[in-house]
Image 1 (cartoon, helix red, strand yellow):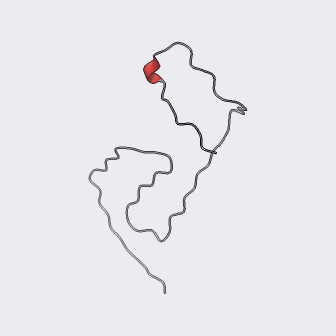
Image 2 (cartoon, helix red, strand yellow; image 1 turned 180 degrees about the vertical axis):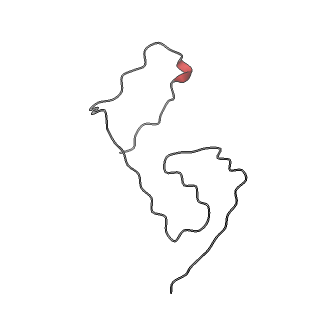
Image 3 (cartoon, rainbow, N blue to C red; image 1 turned 45 degrees about the vertical axis):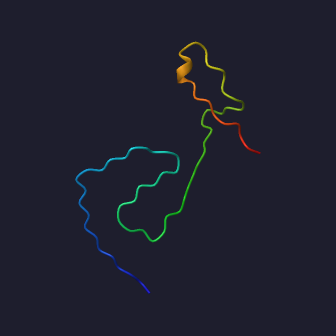
Amino acid sequence: MNWTIHQSIVIHQLRVDSVTNSSVVQIGTSGQISSLSNLYNTGGFTGPAPEPVGGSPELVVPLPAPTP
């Protein structure tokens, strides 16, 4: 069975408080949303990032250890 849906949506204000990896904002209907996540190493890095030098320690965000 085929469905044809016509919508008219008027948005006066759209506020997004937070955007994270793989965030989706949907307005209207969708038959299917497939997730897609790409990770690119465009700098050709092969090791961990160097430790920060100087600066304020408040700018360093601790991350949890990776899980195997």
